[in-house]
Image 1: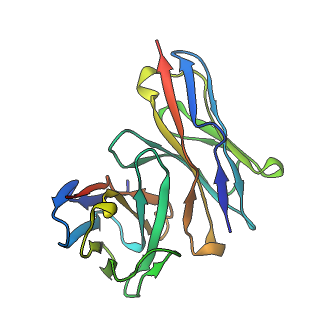
Image 2: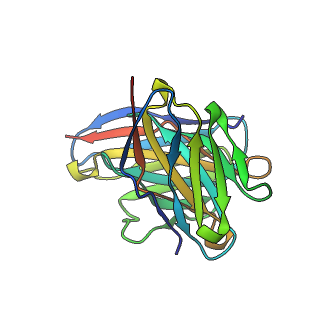
Length: 116
Length: 114
């Protein structure tokens, strides 16, 4: 079955630094990657959608310059949280979608980011 | 824009009892519908999905869901709940008309009492 590997699972960083989160599709080509953010006891909120080789499309209210998304290959997408602040602390989850038979949305295991 | 409503924030059932989690969606075209389960601090695991065809969908762990277009619903069911089913369940809707984005409901936390 389709597997998406997300790293790191947990990261603690100092305020003002940048953090990169990687999401890899291990056994299929992810034509589209989705990045979500989940606050405690809340649902997943879509941050952005990226297609391989194209610029990401951000949802309304999401700062493009703060959350940099790169989808340079069909198996790798990265989310970089730049100049992180405590309010960026959250659970970030990626989701990959491929071509048939990988039409489903396969989720990574998530990254718990804590900014101190 | 598409939206998903899960009217029950919490549900508590006894082990061995049947379960139904409600999901209503709003989508202009033919939707893709999903149910995911999430344990605390973990990612999401797909339980089942509906793209087309048979409206009764079988999933993993004994779950099933029925797509009812007339009611815009996609309720999740399980005939006999196990303690290990305690988790949070998310219904999601997506489709080609909106860039294949998935929109999630608020989630339903399932508690299982022994």
